[in-house]
Image 1 (tube, rainbow, N blue to C red):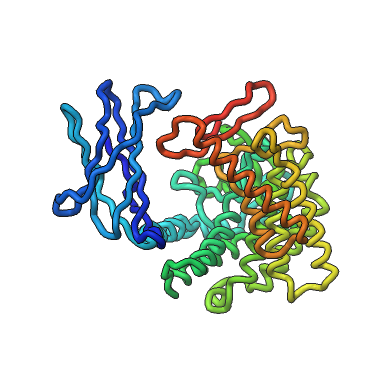
Image 2: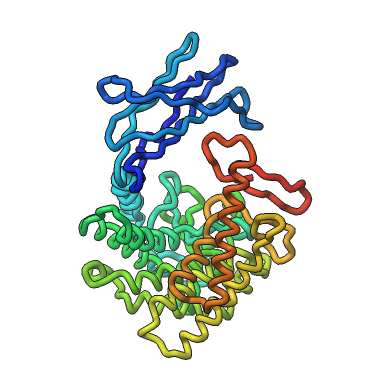
Length: 449
């Protein structure tokens, strides 16, 4: 028997002054799980006892049974939970309850992880003169950015373009998310402090400089700097690739869904948020970022379909383009002409309308395609349609009627997520996907198909 808790900790509810906690008893034997759980403090003293919910199993998760325990604790710790059956005693890992316990425990480590993943050293030197795959001559300076993973020193705006519905937003989303997270933390009760705030900005600036370098003089962005997973410096090149075989091609122009839209969004937001305290150490200025973002947007408005593998836009293009337009409006309100603002706002309202119309009330899901044959599910970007609509509403990018429709869509989608998560045994409250694809039966399931 295991007692599974959130080992990072539980946050305090401001109204009750206590933490609302959830733990899970798990067994891989046939013996019945205990009905009661004991909460102890660091000295082992019993603080309270709680009744576990009924025993349950999850379809497809073999040989495991669960009981959920919902309970409250006062601020403090370390606490442990204990449960005893006829022949077994289980004790949880220690945990704490406190204000902002999660944020204070993980934010510094997350930022340090990005800093450690920067492209530096001999790789960085090589990337100052990178060739193109194919017939194009010359090299470009695309140093900076972050490695894709500890085992992959390539750098991606996106990949999986050949699959059309699976493009993840990568480096540009990191830059945008760093800036978005910092602004939300500043508005929260969490005491971020000037040094931690600066770390967010410094890491975002590192990425913004890289995105600026990844823009071609024509206005589009390069999708990848790729070495076919070899870590061979001489194989690094600007290219696109497909399949696990790493078949490279010269289709390296990033469409909206291929990293181009998020690159525009990230650069536009960087131009508004990053100030001289950070950019004096950068290669580019906030105005450089904005000019690159606007140039990239104009280019994609004209050429996006040319860069898409199937020549058709889908939901990913819509939310990436909407975020790009929202951030351009937010950053450029006082710096560009009214005519430019009007054209960007019209495009934003078009994209927001597209997303709203993609919501299928009868199916409680978004459609990823135009025909409704494919539902929206994604390994990393699943919430981005809602985030794009939320951002459009909160920045005032939409007219009142459309903003109201966006709010209704957001509300319906969140209610559907909750409904789908709770309609089956789900001890860990995992989100569930509604999977609708051509040629297969529609189904709800945990995790990415």
